Image (cartoon, rainbow, N blue to C red; front, side, top):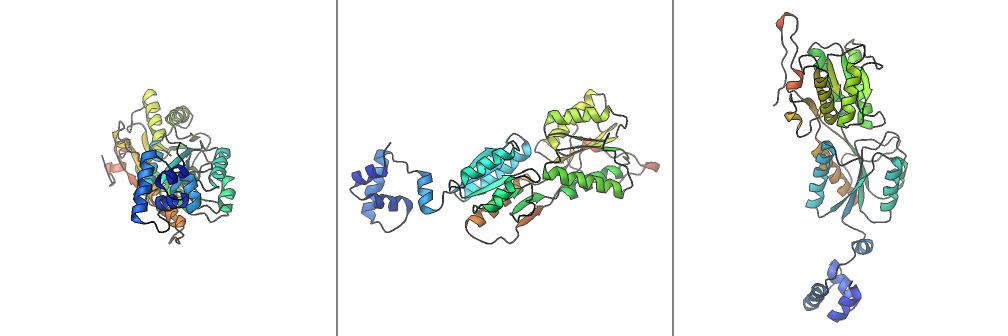
Length: 347
């Protein structure tokens, strides 16, 4: 593999001249620059990105530490991150943490030596030990889908409380008085926010919430949604509606309802959370809370790039709006007297 000294020897210049030519630092005469570039092409020389980054103080690389890349919601967020990164000549390194704090800490320590210019930490656990490491590092970090307790780390989240509250109020308006809730793990920020919002919305409506029979936690996978729905529907307090804290889990829950012989929405209404790209193609199409996953990724990346450039942030903590999208999985139940309310239908 050719080195910078080989290029310098072939071009008849000093190694520092090769470095100045490739990095755009210092003055290099046009004819000298052309000789250096010709030597680079002839030898097939590839400068070390890490070495160049250490010298210039910039690698043009950012890291994304994310629980998984297999869920549609995270895939959309990654698209938003990549679009902004590519438009600003940054490359993205993906690191799958599986929500394991030890893995997160390993990645954080790996990148502290200047291998990347900044990090986006997605969906860390509540009270995650990595927050202490994040607050201690000088490397720019933005948290997505979480907040650092006691530390002022920039963050981007969606309005989970608004979305969950609107979903529950909507089901109550349809006449449902027994609503089951399939949530993600309470160790996840989004799940904890939705849990508190559901309890609060039911309490304000004077509707009891039995956590023992009407609440089950999954892990955002289709199989966990399937198992959770079977558990709730087989219990003594059979609900007439399910609110599911993730569309992928909702897909599994809907399949479980069908396997158990329930009709959607005639017997059981279903409302999800995410509005993943193919939620409108569920059978029936899924009513769900739309969160702007792509925009969350793009805004987080813009915040990170501002930090890398040393620019102050106008807002360190962004809360992205959500919207309830009504489709066929939750047709309104007829109210006493035949009245029906209005709704925002899509699909």
